[in-house]
Length: 279
Image (tube, rainbow, N blue to C red; front, top):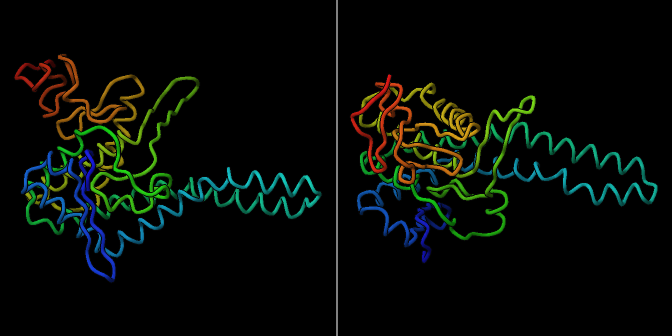
Protein backbone atom coordinates (compact mmCIF):
# COMPACT_ATOMS: atom_id res chain seq x y z
CA UNK A 1 0.00 0.00 0.00
CA UNK A 2 1.33 3.43 -0.92
CA UNK A 3 1.34 5.09 2.49
CA UNK A 4 4.24 6.48 4.56
CA UNK A 5 2.88 5.11 7.85
CA UNK A 6 4.56 1.77 8.66
CA UNK A 7 1.90 -0.89 9.16
CA UNK A 8 1.13 -4.49 8.27
CA UNK A 9 -2.30 -6.15 8.18
CA UNK A 10 -3.46 -9.72 7.70
CA UNK A 11 -6.94 -10.71 6.55
CA UNK A 12 -8.42 -14.18 6.16
CA UNK A 13 -11.76 -15.23 4.70
CA UNK A 14 -13.24 -17.93 2.48
CA UNK A 15 -11.51 -16.48 -0.56
CA UNK A 16 -8.07 -16.88 1.02
CA UNK A 17 -5.48 -14.77 2.79
CA UNK A 18 -4.66 -11.16 2.08
CA UNK A 19 -1.62 -9.28 3.34
CA UNK A 20 -1.30 -5.48 3.28
CA UNK A 21 2.17 -3.97 3.70
CA UNK A 22 2.65 -0.21 3.51
CA UNK A 23 5.62 1.55 1.92
CA UNK A 24 6.42 2.92 5.37
CA UNK A 25 6.80 -0.61 6.76
CA UNK A 26 9.10 -1.62 3.90
CA UNK A 27 11.27 1.44 4.57
CA UNK A 28 11.36 1.04 8.36
CA UNK A 29 11.76 -2.71 8.85
CA UNK A 30 14.36 -5.19 7.66
CA UNK A 31 13.25 -8.14 5.56
CA UNK A 32 13.37 -10.54 8.54
CA UNK A 33 11.41 -8.11 10.71
CA UNK A 34 8.82 -7.58 7.99
CA UNK A 35 8.36 -11.31 7.48
CA UNK A 36 8.00 -11.87 11.23
CA UNK A 37 5.30 -9.19 11.59
CA UNK A 38 3.45 -10.39 8.48
CA UNK A 39 3.40 -13.97 9.78
CA UNK A 40 2.12 -12.78 13.17
CA UNK A 41 -0.70 -10.72 11.64
CA UNK A 42 -1.82 -13.59 9.41
CA UNK A 43 -1.83 -15.91 12.43
CA UNK A 44 -3.99 -13.41 14.34
CA UNK A 45 -6.36 -13.14 11.35
CA UNK A 46 -6.80 -16.94 11.37
CA UNK A 47 -7.47 -17.17 15.12
CA UNK A 48 -11.28 -17.50 15.66
CA UNK A 49 -11.29 -15.97 19.15
CA UNK A 50 -9.43 -12.91 17.87
CA UNK A 51 -12.05 -12.37 15.18
CA UNK A 52 -14.91 -12.76 17.67
CA UNK A 53 -13.36 -10.40 20.19
CA UNK A 54 -12.60 -7.85 17.49
CA UNK A 55 -16.23 -7.90 16.41
CA UNK A 56 -17.44 -7.61 20.00
CA UNK A 57 -15.09 -4.68 20.60
CA UNK A 58 -16.46 -2.85 17.55
CA UNK A 59 -20.03 -3.47 18.77
CA UNK A 60 -19.15 -2.03 22.18
CA UNK A 61 -17.81 1.13 20.53
CA UNK A 62 -21.12 1.56 18.70
CA UNK A 63 -23.00 1.09 21.98
CA UNK A 64 -20.85 3.81 23.55
CA UNK A 65 -22.10 6.40 21.07
CA UNK A 66 -25.71 5.22 21.32
CA UNK A 67 -26.40 7.77 24.04
CA UNK A 68 -25.55 10.61 21.68
CA UNK A 69 -27.62 9.13 18.84
CA UNK A 70 -30.78 8.73 20.92
CA UNK A 71 -31.02 12.44 21.74
CA UNK A 72 -32.71 13.35 18.44
CA UNK A 73 -35.43 10.64 18.29
CA UNK A 74 -36.15 10.99 22.01
CA UNK A 75 -36.54 14.75 21.75
CA UNK A 76 -38.83 14.36 18.72
CA UNK A 77 -41.02 11.75 20.43
CA UNK A 78 -41.34 13.83 23.60
CA UNK A 79 -42.14 16.99 21.62
CA UNK A 80 -45.14 15.33 19.94
CA UNK A 81 -46.47 13.93 23.20
CA UNK A 82 -45.39 10.30 22.90
CA UNK A 83 -44.00 10.22 26.43
CA UNK A 84 -44.08 6.46 26.97
CA UNK A 85 -42.38 5.69 23.65
CA UNK A 86 -39.82 8.45 24.22
CA UNK A 87 -38.95 7.15 27.68
CA UNK A 88 -38.67 3.60 26.33
CA UNK A 89 -36.25 4.76 23.65
CA UNK A 90 -34.26 6.67 26.27
CA UNK A 91 -34.00 3.60 28.52
CA UNK A 92 -33.05 1.34 25.59
CA UNK A 93 -30.28 3.56 24.29
CA UNK A 94 -29.12 4.46 27.79
CA UNK A 95 -28.74 0.79 28.67
CA UNK A 96 -26.77 0.15 25.47
CA UNK A 97 -24.48 3.10 26.21
CA UNK A 98 -23.85 1.96 29.78
CA UNK A 99 -23.06 -1.56 28.57
CA UNK A 100 -20.67 -0.17 25.99
CA UNK A 101 -18.69 1.82 28.56
CA UNK A 102 -18.75 -0.89 31.25
CA UNK A 103 -17.88 -3.84 29.01
CA UNK A 104 -16.06 -2.22 26.09
CA UNK A 105 -12.72 -1.66 27.82
CA UNK A 106 -12.58 -5.22 29.11
CA UNK A 107 -13.43 -6.66 25.67
CA UNK A 108 -10.67 -4.60 24.02
CA UNK A 109 -8.24 -5.73 26.72
CA UNK A 110 -9.02 -9.40 26.09
CA UNK A 111 -8.77 -8.82 22.34
CA UNK A 112 -5.23 -7.53 22.82
CA UNK A 113 -4.40 -10.43 25.16
CA UNK A 114 -5.64 -12.96 22.60
CA UNK A 115 -3.51 -11.39 19.85
CA UNK A 116 -0.45 -11.37 22.13
CA UNK A 117 -0.98 -15.06 22.85
CA UNK A 118 -1.10 -15.84 19.12
CA UNK A 119 2.21 -14.02 18.56
CA UNK A 120 3.90 -15.88 21.41
CA UNK A 121 2.50 -19.25 20.35
CA UNK A 122 3.08 -19.12 16.59
CA UNK A 123 6.17 -17.02 15.83
CA UNK A 124 9.15 -18.82 14.33
CA UNK A 125 11.27 -15.66 14.28
CA UNK A 126 10.97 -14.19 17.79
CA UNK A 127 14.10 -12.03 17.58
CA UNK A 128 13.07 -10.12 14.43
CA UNK A 129 9.49 -9.90 15.71
CA UNK A 130 10.63 -8.27 18.96
CA UNK A 131 12.72 -5.69 17.12
CA UNK A 132 9.94 -5.00 14.62
CA UNK A 133 7.36 -4.37 17.35
CA UNK A 134 9.75 -2.00 19.13
CA UNK A 135 10.42 -0.12 15.88
CA UNK A 136 6.69 0.25 15.22
CA UNK A 137 6.16 1.57 18.75
CA UNK A 138 8.80 4.27 18.21
CA UNK A 139 7.15 5.56 15.04
CA UNK A 140 4.73 8.48 15.31
CA UNK A 141 2.61 10.04 12.64
CA UNK A 142 -0.50 9.76 10.53
CA UNK A 143 -2.47 6.53 10.51
CA UNK A 144 -3.16 4.43 7.43
CA UNK A 145 -6.32 5.69 5.74
CA UNK A 146 -9.17 3.19 6.01
CA UNK A 147 -12.95 3.24 5.92
CA UNK A 148 -14.84 5.62 8.14
CA UNK A 149 -16.25 2.69 10.15
CA UNK A 150 -12.76 1.61 11.18
CA UNK A 151 -11.62 5.15 11.94
CA UNK A 152 -14.62 5.86 14.16
CA UNK A 153 -15.27 2.46 15.77
CA UNK A 154 -12.00 0.57 15.39
CA UNK A 155 -13.78 -2.19 13.45
CA UNK A 156 -11.17 -4.60 12.11
CA UNK A 157 -8.45 -2.43 13.57
CA UNK A 158 -6.71 -5.22 15.46
CA UNK A 159 -5.91 -6.94 12.17
CA UNK A 160 -3.24 -4.26 11.76
CA UNK A 161 0.09 -4.38 13.62
CA UNK A 162 -0.50 -0.77 14.72
CA UNK A 163 -4.15 -0.87 15.69
CA UNK A 164 -6.33 1.55 13.74
CA UNK A 165 -9.13 3.48 15.31
CA UNK A 166 -10.20 6.85 16.69
CA UNK A 167 -7.58 9.12 18.28
CA UNK A 168 -8.47 10.18 21.82
CA UNK A 169 -7.10 11.62 25.05
CA UNK A 170 -8.62 11.12 28.51
CA UNK A 171 -7.96 12.71 31.89
CA UNK A 172 -9.02 11.45 35.31
CA UNK A 173 -9.16 13.83 38.27
CA UNK A 174 -9.83 13.20 41.95
CA UNK A 175 -10.71 16.20 44.17
CA UNK A 176 -9.36 18.54 41.50
CA UNK A 177 -6.04 16.71 41.18
CA UNK A 178 -5.17 14.96 37.90
CA UNK A 179 -4.39 11.32 38.71
CA UNK A 180 -4.29 9.74 35.26
CA UNK A 181 -3.85 10.91 31.67
CA UNK A 182 -3.98 8.62 28.65
CA UNK A 183 -4.04 8.86 24.88
CA UNK A 184 -4.57 6.38 22.08
CA UNK A 185 -0.89 6.85 21.12
CA UNK A 186 0.28 6.01 24.65
CA UNK A 187 -1.90 2.92 24.94
CA UNK A 188 -0.92 1.63 21.49
CA UNK A 189 2.82 2.14 22.00
CA UNK A 190 2.66 0.50 25.42
CA UNK A 191 0.76 -2.45 23.92
CA UNK A 192 3.37 -2.95 21.20
CA UNK A 193 6.23 -2.80 23.72
CA UNK A 194 4.48 -5.21 26.10
CA UNK A 195 3.90 -7.63 23.21
CA UNK A 196 7.60 -7.36 22.30
CA UNK A 197 8.50 -8.04 25.93
CA UNK A 198 6.23 -11.09 26.10
CA UNK A 199 7.73 -12.59 22.95
CA UNK A 200 11.25 -11.88 24.24
CA UNK A 201 10.65 -13.40 27.68
CA UNK A 202 8.65 -16.44 26.56
CA UNK A 203 10.22 -17.31 23.21
CA UNK A 204 13.79 -16.18 23.82
CA UNK A 205 14.04 -16.27 27.61
CA UNK A 206 12.13 -19.50 28.28
CA UNK A 207 9.62 -17.97 30.73
CA UNK A 208 6.16 -19.45 31.18
CA UNK A 209 3.38 -18.03 29.02
CA UNK A 210 1.01 -17.62 31.97
CA UNK A 211 -2.04 -15.37 32.23
CA UNK A 212 -0.20 -13.50 34.99
CA UNK A 213 2.34 -12.27 32.47
CA UNK A 214 -0.42 -10.85 30.29
CA UNK A 215 -1.57 -8.64 33.16
CA UNK A 216 1.50 -6.55 32.28
CA UNK A 217 -0.65 -4.92 29.60
CA UNK A 218 -3.06 -3.33 32.07
CA UNK A 219 -0.36 -2.57 34.64
CA UNK A 220 1.90 -0.90 32.08
CA UNK A 221 -0.82 1.38 30.73
CA UNK A 222 -1.87 2.25 34.27
CA UNK A 223 1.69 3.18 35.27
CA UNK A 224 2.17 5.26 32.11
CA UNK A 225 -1.12 7.06 32.76
CA UNK A 226 -0.11 7.94 36.31
CA UNK A 227 3.28 9.21 35.15
CA UNK A 228 1.69 11.31 32.39
CA UNK A 229 -0.62 12.90 34.96
CA UNK A 230 2.43 14.61 36.49
CA UNK A 231 4.04 15.41 33.14
CA UNK A 232 6.51 12.53 33.38
CA UNK A 233 6.95 9.26 31.50
CA UNK A 234 7.06 5.59 32.47
CA UNK A 235 9.72 3.09 31.43
CA UNK A 236 8.29 0.27 29.30
CA UNK A 237 10.75 -2.34 28.00
CA UNK A 238 13.59 0.17 28.13
CA UNK A 239 11.63 2.93 26.38
CA UNK A 240 10.15 6.07 27.94
CA UNK A 241 6.41 6.23 27.24
CA UNK A 242 4.42 9.40 27.87
CA UNK A 243 1.18 10.95 26.70
CA UNK A 244 2.53 11.27 23.13
CA UNK A 245 3.76 7.67 23.07
CA UNK A 246 7.40 6.55 23.03
CA UNK A 247 9.62 9.48 23.94
CA UNK A 248 13.08 7.92 24.11
CA UNK A 249 14.48 9.40 20.90
CA UNK A 250 13.05 12.84 21.59
CA UNK A 251 13.81 12.94 25.30
CA UNK A 252 16.45 15.52 26.35
CA UNK A 253 19.43 14.45 28.47
CA UNK A 254 18.64 13.95 32.14
CA UNK A 255 17.94 11.57 34.99
CA UNK A 256 15.13 9.09 34.34
CA UNK A 257 13.88 5.84 35.95
CA UNK A 258 16.42 3.10 35.25
CA UNK A 259 14.96 0.82 32.51
CA UNK A 260 17.21 -2.01 33.71
CA UNK A 261 15.84 -1.76 37.25
CA UNK A 262 19.30 -1.85 38.84
CA UNK A 263 19.07 1.70 40.25
CA UNK A 264 16.39 4.27 40.92
CA UNK A 265 17.67 6.66 38.24
CA UNK A 266 19.95 6.38 35.21
CA UNK A 267 21.42 9.17 33.07
CA UNK A 268 20.04 9.48 29.51
CA UNK A 269 22.53 11.44 27.35
CA UNK A 270 20.02 12.22 24.62
CA UNK A 271 20.82 9.21 22.46
CA UNK A 272 21.48 6.30 24.82
CA UNK A 273 21.44 5.10 28.44
CA UNK A 274 24.81 5.57 30.17
CA UNK A 275 26.50 3.71 33.04
CA UNK A 276 25.85 6.63 35.46
CA UNK A 277 23.17 5.86 38.04
CA UNK A 278 21.72 7.44 41.18
CA UNK A 279 20.30 5.66 44.21
